Image (cartoon, rainbow, N blue to C red; front, top):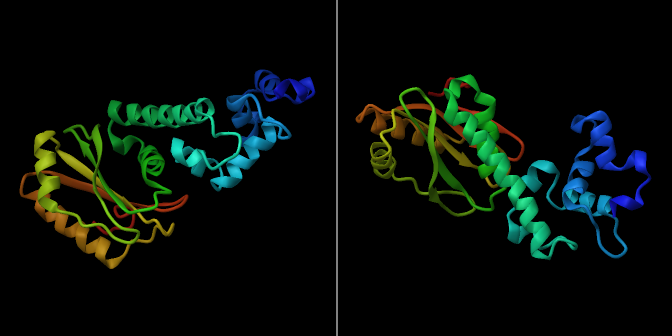
Length: 224
């Protein structure tokens, strides 16, 4: 338990004295979990959790069922707490993107998509629908596929854009392999969707490929 740690080294006291930026990832997670279990301190449990998911970014993308594989998180309470933190992170970033043009915070767009798509076992194709001021209306996962590929139907994206009265979109998909490098098929699909959406006056602002810890932008590479 945290009370077993000497007072100056306890994450809570350290945070209050020095601010949250002074804490390591493992200490912040320990604050969230509060207790370990028999034979394992809360700091060790926190480290085990980070190790199991390859660091903080992987942990933030883990679902409640995935957390079950970590001993000490098999009860519902702690799994729910970690899942709640993830959802708060997603909602916080989504709120920022809804409040101002996505051009004002390209880093937030990448962060949001990484939280949503990175670490998935299968490929997911998602679309961020934007209003006339380039603010986020919705992020929708349009298609899901196999480990290596997804079938994408342009007419479904066009129909949804019209339903939401979207003026622009940002396309996104993940690479389960972890490598974010776009393929030739990704480039061809982007141009196909760009042409289809142009017929209904919806612009494609970008296509982002999400890997493990990396997000590649077609716009930044001049591929649009």
